[in-house]
Image 1 (tube, rainbow, N blue to C red):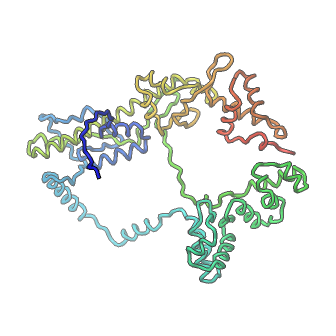
Image 2 (cartoon, one colour):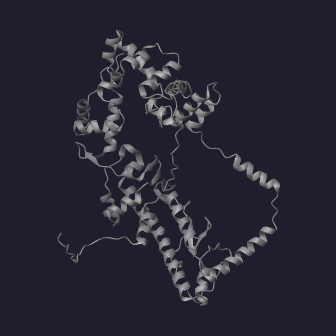
Image 3 (cartoon, rainbow, N blue to C red):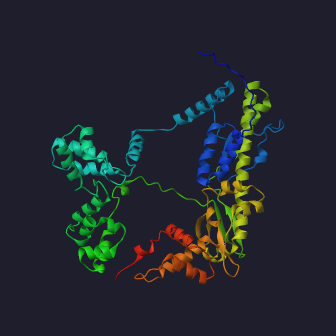
Length: 485
């Protein structure tokens, strides 16, 4: 066996590392208004020299945040809420003084049994949304079934997916639950009788049949279509279904209308509500002078300043070198945070001004006048990099006279009409939706026919582009839009 040789090699390589302050600055720029508030509140907890001003107080003034306090400035703010808990003796001493003062004030406040009962009643009154499993278990408790079936039913309820389906074979569930297969099968049949109807199905086809049965339509044409011609139903092959059932196409369409009222995912209505509150970061409205004005939403952004109390601690010279260096670092960090917030607001305002200038027709007349616009164009006008624009508009919204829009709505590629006018793809999509919306449902237009109409209107685009925009608009293909009555 030959001995291995080790060799030392030097290698030169370039790498990019973001400093913590730069990462924080980018995070502040990208955050929407409500998210920014959480970022600032976290920093308030971590940095003891930062103080929050009242919402109707002094504006953010980064010039006040001097890292080296002026020795001649002996101002203190007795109303400041200081953040303590540091591992330095001076902070522990101040912390203890604050706690003693708070305890003395609290001792003068009575807190009796009535207050405790009110507090308990308040927390007991808090409600939360009922889960699908809870909803089904409440129904199961009222059923007169044996202990084995009840245990199997509970296991099945816990095995439902988000749609309310059981996708695991019952024999596998029987093995996992260590229950007889017959009891699991009985429990599965019971589960399908619970509300919402369709729960416990193994697939969408069975889910639809369960709902039709519970509605007393198990012998209807709708049930026959789902049971016997499910594949043709998915493709909306109405003539083929009508021929196989020996009925008129109009009757098939009526049956499909009934099927369309059923719930394809009955468990979804119990899913967690992931809707989020949207707050406009910028408002553009018309003033009394007839001109549009821009106002940034600062209602949810805490106003900050650096603590005069900690400045005085450094000025008095009673701190050790380690304590002084710690405070100076916190002052620098706080000053950078305040400056980053101000820079964020200025950048968003400058970008909004350019959008207002370049999309002026939109603000005057509405979405039909939206023009093509790229981030690179705005970046060059503002004097920043394109990625800065991308970060500044991320997850942010602007309130306009025509409604609330996401910032990226105003950035869209486009086309040139026959007369040389620039049209955004949003306008082209609206034109496609308008053309298809006015078609004869008995003879719906093909994508190529839509291309021809757009071409006559001076908009020249390819058929595949029409198909792409149609799908983005949620419009079905030609053969699935056709009506036979």
